[in-house]
Amino acid sequence: MTPSRIRRKRIAIACAVAAVATAMTPWTAPHADAAPRLQVTTLASNLNIPWDVEAAPDGTALLTQRAGGFVAVRPDGRKISVAADLSRVFAVKESGVMGLALDPGFAQNRRFYTCQAEVTRPGAPSIPGELANLPLPWPNTGQVVNIVAWRISGDWIRATRERTVLSGIPVNASGRHAGCGLTASGRSLWIGTGDNAIAGNPQSWNSLGGKVLHVNLNGTAAAGNPNPRSPIYSLGHRNVQGVAVQPGTGRVYAIEQGTDRDDELNLLRSGGNYGYRPDRAPVIYDESVPMTDPVRVPGAIGAVWRSGSSTIATPDATFLPSTGWGPFSGGLVISALKGKRLVFVRLSADGRRTVSVVEALQERYGRLRAVAVARDGSLLVTTSNGGSADKLLRVRWVG
Image 1 (cartoon, rainbow, N blue to C red):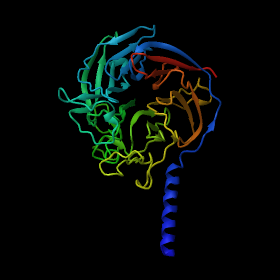
Image 2 (cartoon, one colour):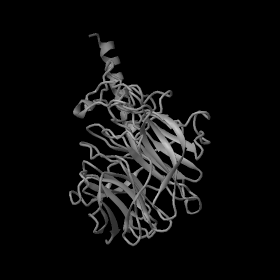
Image 3 (cartoon, rainbow, N blue to C red):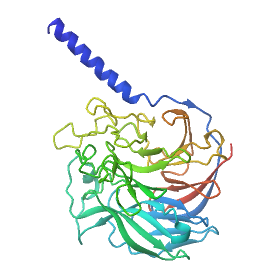
Image 4 (tube, one colour):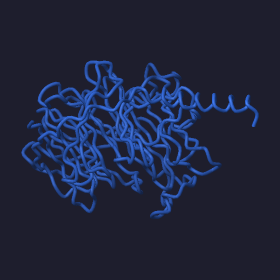
């Protein structure tokens, strides 16, 4: 190799390293505070993979269960199995009845929204067992993820399907990486989607998979999307199951699960590309790529927080009240499935950096999935251990 070629190669390597460093600069190693003391009580038991939870104005906790079925837990502790027609649900692997959001006018209209995988024709076959984990482009055999509007009765006994708000969110026969996070803010819905383990989805503007979507309550594209006719707000995501809007600032964050490293918390911006591109190998879904790849995705936006190696599988995040949570009041709490813990994150004033992090409840309750703030400021947390052994927990900060 000639000296000039050596110099060019060194320059190329230096540029690549600099690009990686630039993409990762929003995240810095935070100060680790002492683990907090938390008070945990059980509000409901005998649940089966409760995927999401929301607190209603009257203090009722409404839950979705992945395999189908809504549950309402009343303030007096009564658990109500809500009657609803969920016969179309496609509950395979990670798909099923997933994200949940209450309408901003819920107290008056009793409306809520779900993100759920459904069959489009009877008998749609699925990919069995561990085959679904193979990095192959499994076909769609008649499945789709829909955003559905429901209305629940005043006594919490029955939910009636009103309409499909948005359709066309992809899911295939494997049920893998179905997403699907759902948050209502103002008069709009934020929707996090999974990439279905299809290599081209995260970077494609023609697919709603591997994206964060922003739509009005009627399903039309919300103002501020990069394409005013498209629901896509940001791209380059792997599997977004939680979206959180910061009170006061309106900043929107997505929490997504990583490969074998780097679960990510991302501060979203319109048209932002968050750098996941698993199409390095022909046809194969190549998860050896970085979660944020600024070399193959120029301009990729780095994470505000990331788990490092190995991942802890982070399905949800929510902002805590401004008081009652010690130094993390107003900060974020993140749940972990594989990591079996809660992660409390304090952000910088501009929301772009992590200032401090503590972990709590590690290995005490198993896999933790949904997190939501109750009307009294406590935290509602669901476990996700399966076998109808799951619980709805109430968590309070003691100090």
